[in-house]
Amino acid sequence: FLSANIGQGIRSVLDELGWIAIEEGKDGEALMRLTESLRRSSDASQIDAFHAMALEGVAEIACRQGQSELAVVLISACDRWRETTKMA
Image (cartoon, rainbow, N blue to C red; front, side, top):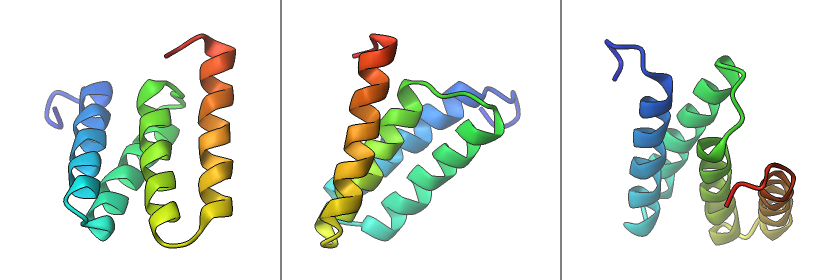
């Protein structure tokens, strides 16, 4: 993906790796993968389902670390985006 400069594919892989790390309890690794996905989304000015998936992962980590207010804000933003764009 990197050599072909396929941004969407890179973000998809980063999101999946982030969620796998969350499931394995590796919050630091997950946060690294998800924030890289978000950075790539921001660089490309693309807000899409991958962006929401990464934000939901960050919200999961925030919730685990006792930052429930941040988690609610992130999940609310994702829900609003999905409602506005009609993306599931």
